[in-house]
Image (cartoon, rainbow, N blue to C red; front, side, top):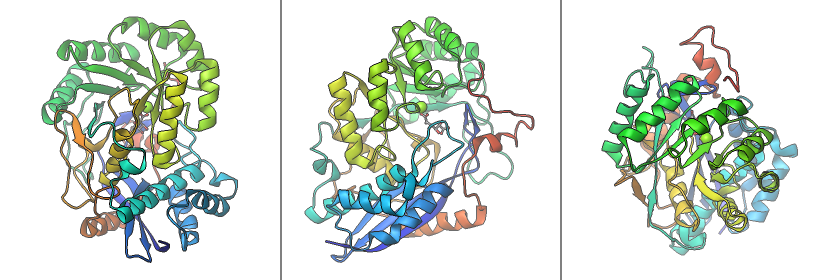
Amino acid sequence: MRITTIKITPIAVPDVPLLNTKGVHGKVFLRAIIELETDTGLVGLGEAYGAKRTLAGLQAVGPTLEGLDPYDLRDLRRRVERALPEGGGVNAPTALADHKVVDVVYSAFEIACLDLRGKEVDRPLYDLLGGAVRKDIPFGGYLFFKYANLPDAVSDDIFGDVLTPDAMVAQAKALVGDHGYKSLKLKGGVLPPDEEVETMLKLREAFPDHGLRIDPMGAWTVPTAAKVVKQLDGVLEYLEDPVRGLDAMAELSAMIEMPLATNLVVVEFEHVVEAIQKDAVQIILSDHHYWRGATGAIHLGEMCRAAGLGVSMHSNSHLGISLAAMCHVAAATPNLTYDCDTHYPWYSKEIIKGGRVTFKDGKLRVPEGPGLGVELDQEVLAELHALYNEQMVVDRDDTDEMLKYVPDYVRKVPRW
Ligand code: GKR
Ligand code: MG
């Protein structure tokens, strides 16, 4: 089996004004949909970030994949590295984590290659990753403070403004009611720390048995984070990226008992070693979009097992191809110690045939078809590609978007 045709389609998906430490989501988020066709008539799918550096990287690498054997991931890596000298740079300079374009691009094609392999041998992707240890994948409800839509929004508004602890509890009740989540993660770093502490305490009151987490994405200094840890003693299952940088995480970690998790300071295998040496984190969030694909995410899980670290799963705005890949990775990661994150319920579009998938008791059944087990809906793909052309948004910049709501907004990380 050899790859003959490579199709990369940028799409824009209606987004909602979700707040974070850097600012707010724009009215669309960007993804790139990959279709790899083979001489045997199969099509392998992938869903990657769609902002300009990833897209340029995918487009630079795409044509060089003609003739690739999807079983030869080392050849894939060689081709990606050759087409992107010096790693292709940093994927998203406005993000708080530096992902290399080379890793993000490799990861996207790796998933499409695995999808092809699964289709050829007629086995679900999790079987190619070592087999499923679970078929029902547990996800947590992802809570966001948010603004109501601006008048030029292209998405339906959900919940309007959510800017107080009580409004957040109402959001959580709605999400748990609709999807049955058993754990909740708050995207913090938005309101002053005392208000976010109050939010977590109110969530604990409303959900006495749920696992609770907060992720302020580096918004706090070490003393502020230490104070929050005291206030939330016994409330959180873990605290995610409270402070910025590996050394600050290590400093905080040495002062507290509460486990620290990250998707910001450990984003490459080399970082894992340093994090272990410095005892900076106790949980790593895996993500096949930059941990060298699904096989890389499985290796990360194994490394965490050996080092005694916990594993959770990171999410960014995404659709169903990514969701399917997340499910396969989660199915084949024995030591997935926490419910996975997902932005999925915040969106209403879907590019896979059959439309939106539904959570039952907070869980999703891993697709059982060959490969990823999902098929692309070409009509919706065309619709979202048209939206991409119409919106002319080519990059993600949450800080820039924030100026539409707060004209004198200044990004500051840490802020408190
Ligand atoms: O969508 O605003 C967002 C999140 O803040 C996302 O960009 C982060 O990557 O979910 C993420 C996280 O856990 O840090
Ligand atoms: Mg995070």
